[in-house]
Image 1 (cartoon, rainbow, N blue to C red):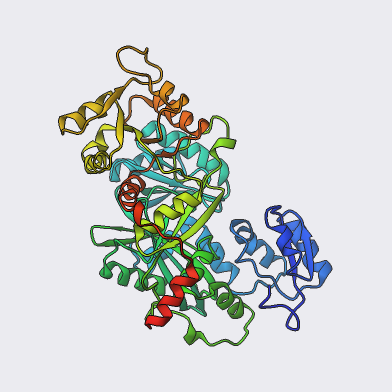
Image 2: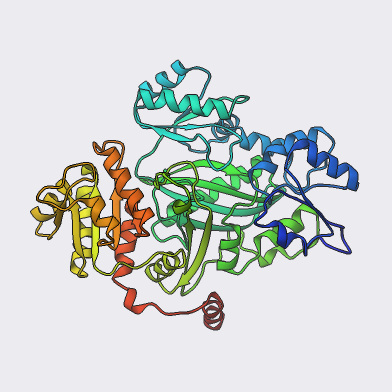
Length: 498
């Protein structure tokens, strides 16, 4: 708003979010605290005699209104509403990806349950169901069998009644990479690439982001840039956009493209020291600027001597009985960003900033059998750091078989015999951290839920993602080297080196 303010334009802001509306009051000429509906926005646009509307910095709802507003005479600044609509409609977007020869997971638009079952029969489970024009991944689910498929398809069809639900093959074990960028008339002028800590399957709003990426090969980064350039050109993007990619076995596959600013825009802007929104806004209102000052695809700008981490914050204690597992539908209610000389230090400080408490002694572990062999080095690391491990029966036996001491605990719904009950230990706060890693094959669904919920209700740190657990164990081993510093300190050091 500061960029397009007086004397260029008088600014009218429409906001329906009470968490941010107070800051808008000091930044704009006219503020409407109203619902973001077609009728209300048209009323305000016409009453105020507006010359145009910027919709690409307000999240999903304004994007959904792009074409209806355009069809009612509103001048949308930046990327064409036709392009926005094509990117939001998942079947149309996937068709375009095929047209321009961009790799994606196998997909199909669904018009009946039999279409979904036939697709699964061809590609195998798991499959991901993806409705269009939804907020925060609503009704997006991974199906591991026919019953899941039928149930999730029914949910997806309810929230996407006017557009076909798209089914894709869910790629297990894939890394997820995020591209935040700004383009001008289809040419990318500013970009930043970050990597998710969690493997694909966690909503990007709930993911932990690392900038610069730590585990993505340079060849894969090059492919991501090539695809980004293709998509920006095909949609003739003018303004901000965000993309997610799958990376596995030297293959790069596009997940989606949002023709708007994402929640990671402020994070990448601060981390690399370039204001992406300023760049995008000036492009959308056709205001002159020096684009050479921004990192295009040929001149990337990466943090030097430090790493940025964006970590999600959740409100599980306020959501009674909610299961604190991360899925394709977003659950976070906030986020923090922290910076450190290494990934480990930045990650640990980010976790601490979310309210996470470093465990002192006792760690309870519950792992589905499929994870045990991968988790073993992490369990050994925790043991060598001096933590006393408590584990459910099968996990405890597996650890002991590998000479890692573990106190066996009984499941919450099982009678307490020779082993202490997991739920009681948590409620009595004899456990300092809970690691609970179930999957679709677990037999103890209710017991695992009780353990997770007990940790939340008793204020015990809870980790439910395998990749986060591994990184946490690495970070805990370096906690004695943590130093209090600021982003400005790191950037000052970088400038001195350069």
